[in-house]
Length: 294
Image (cartoon, rainbow, N blue to C red):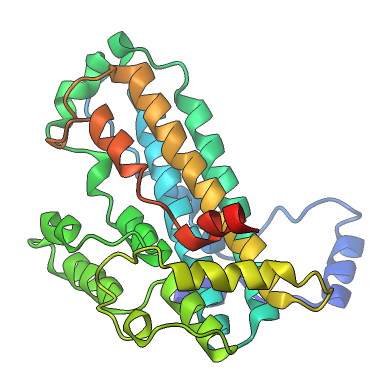
């Protein structure tokens, strides 16, 4: 908490809140000695100054703000997944479930953000697209953090950030540590499942390839229908995260189709075709393939 927050946002007990309400006669407090506490905490005035459209087109504000909202959801989902990782590394499966459930709900909010761009036709997008230059969502560092956490890892994708040394260092670090799925596989090994050593000692900066032994482990997990099977609950929580993330990728494809068809992407990619190929990379692959054998 900053000094500004400490002075403007002061803790209050239930008794203090009740006394304040009594003094105010049930009306909200209207006078503050300093900055309004809500703004000191949420930084709303700062947030609302971060929109700087490049054109006078009224639709660009929707595009800009929805993009910023998605960035916040990327960061929030990463926050929850890292929390879940810490719990799994400590063998606290039950405690890993709440952050995973929250992550799935945040991904629902992320998906809902696409609705704010359903008005955009190619003509609407073309009115300001050229002013974006080579700017593209492909260049979102926080989205890369989210992909890396989920196990979708391609070291080449951090190259655009080499000139941004702090961001590049953060992404390099994210590639150098296990993904959430790596930690799940390691947890299965600690729980007695025979996971090959090469899966536990592999280069974590590369993408995890589906392995039949991990798939077989999940078949066994789901075969136990007991109420205390926390691994099965973990599997379902992870499946929900993967499904909601897949929904976001699908909505991205539909938004691109709606607003620009199969044109070349702003960031130099093949646009729609590149996004379609990326969907073939599966999050938590053995959780899905195991269902065929269940």
